[in-house]
Length: 189
Ligand SMILES: Cc1cc2nc3c(=O)[nH]c(=O)nc-3n(C[C@H](O)[C@H](O)[C@H](O)COP(=O)(O)O)c2cc1C
View 1 (cartoon, helix red, strand yellow):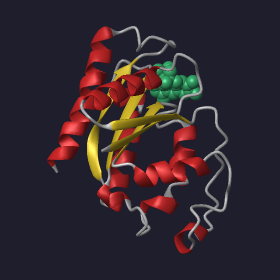
View 2: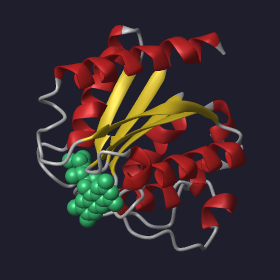
View 3: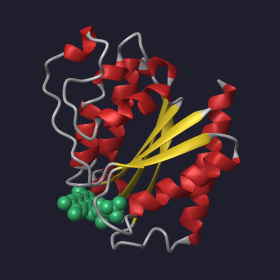
View 4: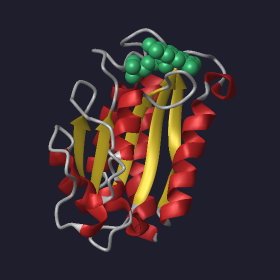
């Protein structure tokens, strides 16, 4: 079982990235092959809405930093997005990445319908609803519903300063277990 974990924060000591690393650890110990990628500082351009990917053997006409990730996305059984909440939704970088996924979302080549999705969020507000995390959550749930992918849940934390999440053993333990559980749940299907 292959899990692809996508970090999308720019900053060092990222809270959402700390969740991602622990989830990967738990998933690996539970028997998955977990690949963690960090797109936070990469150049990922807009989807051009050209739909060339739909009728082509190539993933995308835009050959930027995104291109290397199409095959790992296509090969993954479970994809986990890790994102800070920025202005009541996922980070712009995560959104760019997701917009560019049309090439692998619906084609017969590697449709999302065989995959599981989960998400990890960090935000400043003490309340998850007020933070806007719920908007991000809803986006992923709608994406799964449309592509017939399996929604496997989310883990989120209130943390603001860099390094804050990693310094919380309770949260790191929760993230580790979340990773383990994703593997167990996926195998049950
Ligand atoms: C541009 C920007 C927008 C933000 N918007 C929100 C927000 O809407 N809600 C919230 O609770 N926190 C918001 N935050 C705080 C971050 O979500 C918080 O610091 C988080 O832990 C950052 O995660 P990271 O360390 O993985 O980048 C914002 C931070 C920035 C820089």
